[in-house]
Image (cartoon, rainbow, N blue to C red):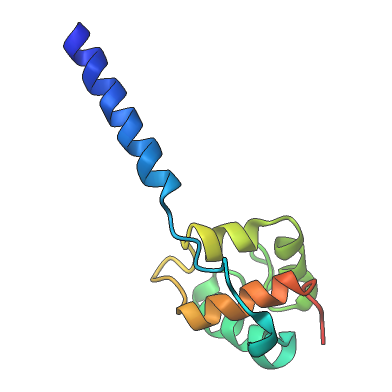
Length: 115
């Protein structure tokens, strides 16, 4: 029983250490050098990666990203940041490029404006 407890504690400790060492790709992000306009930068990224295949198009139960309002709601509630930038679970085929993720991060940081 003591061996099982020791193994459990070791595994838990390793998991905590691993998760605390995640690199913050956006820590020193300088948004003054990155174009992050909704119309010219963000919408094309979303259209190419999120609206195709029926995932986030009009009427989707996952959220309609074909409109600014639909994307804004996910930006405001934090799920866009969490799923695309932090967990990188979206899009499910592969994470967006670092450049695209930085544009989205800067857009969110600037208030997710519709410019």
